[in-house]
Structure formats: structure tokens, C-alpha cells
Image (cartoon, rainbow, N blue to C red; front, side, top):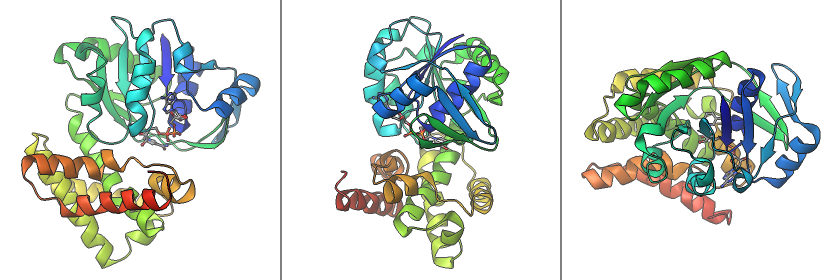
Length: 307
Ligand code: NAD
């Protein structure tokens, strides 16, 4: 299968690498010049659970010309519209587009560029990091749940599931993926922004009663807003999932900590707590914690001069 990875940072490199090794024709698309030059010169280097190096093509999105069978979107949430504009020329009539970004509301953005029959929405618990330009750190295992947003698209989507599974990506076709997308957003909404603001690991944050009150209130706001938009969400099950994730990942700094505190980069807050706050306002559901967390992260982005 011919696949573009649209946004070939940490996660794009993981998916691109695994699909390339499985024998697909894969082209990485990115605009980070040092990363592009490193991969062109030295190949994509893999470190972590195993060491490898592959000669995989990489280019700017505007340089891609041949329509693909599949495009996997892996920019950060706020970078998605620019990427979709830049890849318009390689979106053929039957090009499937899979979105595995964290956060909420991406479907509405993608629909502006891609016909619904070709859109696959999903969620992944795979992780990845970058050591520097051209070097991806791949550790542990993960999985993907995805669904065609057009109910008639299931059969075609199953073919994509097969291709991804041949690459060891552990993918399930999910007949109702939206609750899983919300559940992951809720995990991010309880630990990403809070640990970034408090400058601590997940375990350090979840250790106090005061922090747990914040966590439970954020979960409640996500569940109330999600349910009001027609998504089936079980507050007890989501709470158990969040607490379990926090236990397993206790030693880690979440990605928003890496973005905001460690690298002074803009965050995905507007697509996590911010998305729930906006939707809550639209529906008349109060979400004071999601509002305040979003405003505090925005304020920190201002303090750092990146907003
Ligand atoms: P990343 O910042 O490492 O990668 C994004 C890449 O997209 C960058 O290399 C950037 O240069 C490129 N890019 C952005 N806009 C572009 C444009 N217009 N044209 C070309 N290239 C462009 O981010 P990541 O960690 O790989 O995360 C991607 C998404 O996956 C996010 O939504 C994140 O929340 C989610 N996610 C990440 C992980 C993880 O472990 N890293 C796990 C699950 C989900």
C-alpha cells in the first residue's frame, strides 16, 4: 500500500517505520528542516527497545505529488489545518485519511478537506519520542482503535486495519470509537495540563487529596459534556481507567510537560480541556475547572512568549 505519514515527528516516525518494515511504500512528510536533512543523509534511526536504521523517503508536504492509498495524520492538533491544506494535491478520490491525534474536534476540521467516505477516526495508546533530528525512541507496545465515520466505509476500513496489523500495530475496527477518543482525551485532560502547570510527574500530582479533587472534577466535566453531545461515557469506568493509567505512568512527565515546561512549545490544550470548555459553553453546561486549566495554560504560554 502507498502511505504518506503527514507529520513525521515522534508518532509519525513510529508508524512510518513499522509500515515501511512491513513492505509498504511509505513517504514521510514534515517541515522540520533538520529532521528532513538528517533522515535524507543518515536514514531514520530507531533506538529504544531495538536498534535499527532505515532509508525511508522524507519530503515537505508541498513536494508530494502522487496520490496515496492512505494518509496517516500525525501533526500536533493546532498544526492540522495547515497540514491538510499542504497535502490537498495528494488526496485522490479514494485516498483514505486516518486521524490518530490526541484531543477532540478533529473530525470537523478534516471534513473541510476530505469527503466523509474516506475519513477514519481513531485513538492510539502507542507512544514514541524523538532523541533529536532523525532519531526516534520506540519503547513498549500499544494498540489502535479506529472507525470509518461513514457507516458504509467499514469494509474499506477493514482493509486498512489489515495493512496496519501486518505492521504489528495491533489495530481493532471499533464500531463505536468516539467514547474511546473521549476517554483518552479525559486521561490527557486530567494529567497533561495539571502536571505541566504543577511541573511534576503524574505520580507526584496524583499523590494528594487536593489533586484528586481536581482530577475527579475534570472527569465529571468531560463526562457531562460528552454525554450531552450524545457520546456514551461511564464516569466510574473512566475514573478507573484514569487512575489505572496514572499508576502505570506514575514516573512519567506527560507530553504537555515536555512541550510547555521542557521545550517551551505551544500545547494542545485547546483540543483537550479547552474543547470541553467550549462545548460546555455551547450547551450551557458549566465547566469551571476545564476553563481555568485552559486559561492557566494559555497564560503560561504568554509568559513564555510562545502564544
Ligand atoms: P511531534 O511534535 O513529535 O510531531 C509532529 C510533527 O509534525 C513535527 O515533526 C512537525 O514538524 C510536523 N508538522 C507539523 N505541522 C506541519 C506542517 N504543516 N507541515 C509539515 N509538517 C508539519 O508530535 P507527536 O508526539 O508525534 O504527536 C502527534 C500527535 O499524536 C499529537 O496529537 C499527540 O498528542 C498524539 N500522540 C502522541 C503520542 C506520543 O507518545 N508522542 C502518543 C499518542 C498520541
